[in-house]
Length: 144
Figure 1: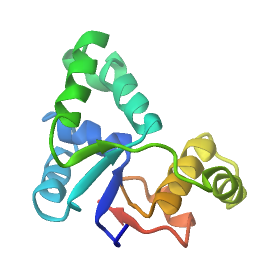
Figure 2: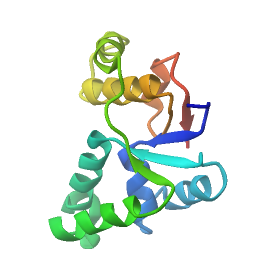
Figure 3: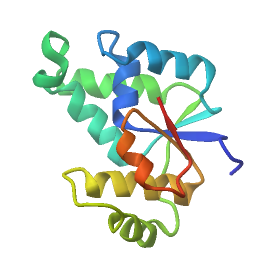
């Protein structure tokens, strides 16, 4: 895959795109309209996190969705020609293990290391608001 021909969006980027009331909606929208790769990728972890966040009242407040509505929102994105659900790439587990040993232990260590490894092994650029991904020095990462 060519560099930046596809982006793996972190769940919070998907959420910011979907929820106009999200504090990062405008920056996510600006990315989508101007700096996005030709393909935007979900993996199962980002899709699951997106669904979880949409149905979490603490996160969504009065805009919380039912599970059925959350699935519809996910399907709306996946129906776009530029959005794809990627399968796990070859070499993921070894890279995930390596990345999980970088930096100090944190609550998000496992998921962050997984997403970084997924993006690296699939040749994707990771797009996120989370500055914690900067610890993965070999990762192609766009911080919004």
